[in-house]
Image (tube, rainbow, N blue to C red; front, side, top):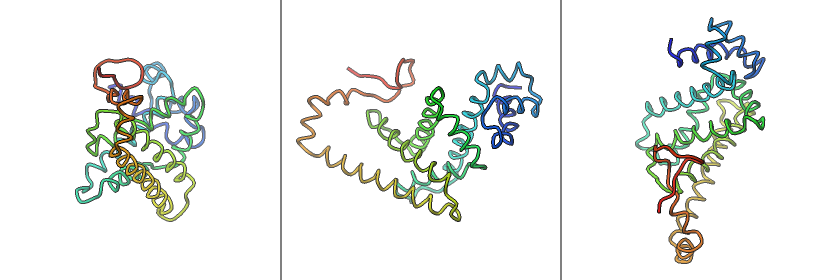
Length: 227
């Protein structure tokens, strides 16, 4: 059995336990027992135990979102509506809110905060990439950072939303996307300004040297400088 199959078996076995025990060691042990995966093999595939399963669960939702995007007819949509649809598809991929709620509790812990931020960033990267983003400069980062804020706030609202069909969540999401679009309009006008253009050639000129990840080995934050 491949490592991915072992991890998936553990994940599916863990899901019924998460609402009661969270993404915890107890859940990880229960998943081993229910799936029949030996403790040694489980530890080899998931060295961080339930944390690795929580990350796998998040990625499973991302893949479901991408499948929905691939099946949807987005050609006639405005770009903002495509982004809105992607976030909505991501939330609709969740079969049980409690799995997400327990994940947020886990990733709120200081020693797992990086993993939580990484998961959200990856979701937003999936969205931008699927929608055809070709930016290769600082905009690669700002787009994903801005959408990460929208996505995170929408998830928090959605967790507490009891409206029929999550209508209030979708209205909240529309407002957040509108806020982003207004910000983009301000950025566009700023770029047209001679004053801002002059500033960009001065103390802020370093922004022009920030590049998106190239796929080549590198250290530090994902990205590179060009000379």
